[in-house]
Image (cartoon, rainbow over all chains, first blue to last red; front, side, top):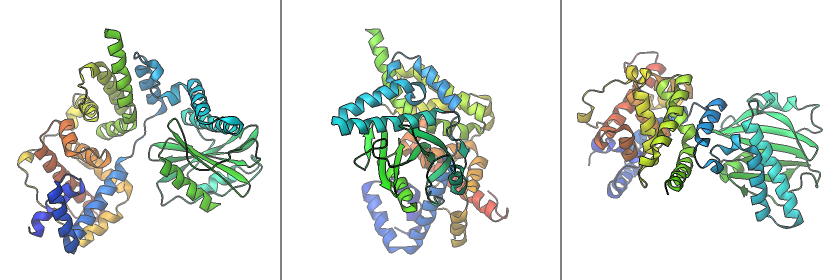
Length: 250
Length: 181
């Protein structure tokens, strides 16, 4: 088949709409034809641009609440459509009960208490009309804002070339210990990053790595005397990616 | 036995509809180009979908179904009636390769997100919506056909034309209006 005819199939190829035979044949052609491969690259770039540009609008909290109420009138109220906004108390109990089933023993109970508290803090922030007290995507604005408000300092990563966006921060408390609560956005999801002084008991969390509780993923680690927690409802890989940026900045 | 059936339906609706809220709002906002109208459209879509869920056939494509409800609601709105134009002759459109040059490729690559967003805004609604469904929602051609209620062949030809129009708009913007759409 001539290049001209193959090029008419490039969009369907990129969209995954070709049959297996044609897909393989076009793949083989592209490996041997720099001109068509160049054309394909241009279309890939356009596809990516549209995908990134198209994810533009986020619904207001008011609309979420309004839709949630209309759905909540349906017979199965207990199933908790948009539970994170409407059912914070129930959510806390749910997290607690599920976490208790997962983690046993004293150490496990302490961990689940910490995780539940962090999940509550995250959910409460997401549901809040003012999730952060310092609103800025600039780490050089957000970091100095915490000076004098918490008894330690920390570094934040440059995320300009990543999918993550810093939304801002607020002071938070975990077990009477003050710390920093930073909010990041990935696509339409908010991710919380908590930073506390590592004092053992209050912020104890013996193991690191992703923890799955309900729809949350959580990553935690200790670095330079500080304990970091990253919590969100995005994929574990995304939590890990943000964690890596934070570790590298430290 | 009617009540338990309704409950099962509501629970399933919730499970199916919940993950689509952000996407539906984004799509509605792109269609209406107006926040209050987009909010009304999403609210109306959920209300209609919940009400009509008992007629939704299990095993059917829920996403295409609810997007279709949203789009039909938009089409019947004042804005929708005004902005939806007919695309003459698209069913007979031949799928020809788009012209491409190295400078074009470079221009598109450099196009900032805002430029692409502006170009999407400037596109006619039929082009804008099919690009969003394909590129942002990553719907298959079959799902797009169901959502827009058009044949598969029209999906392909309209997508081709939409991409071509978008490229031309980006070129036009990048080169200071030397090219027409």
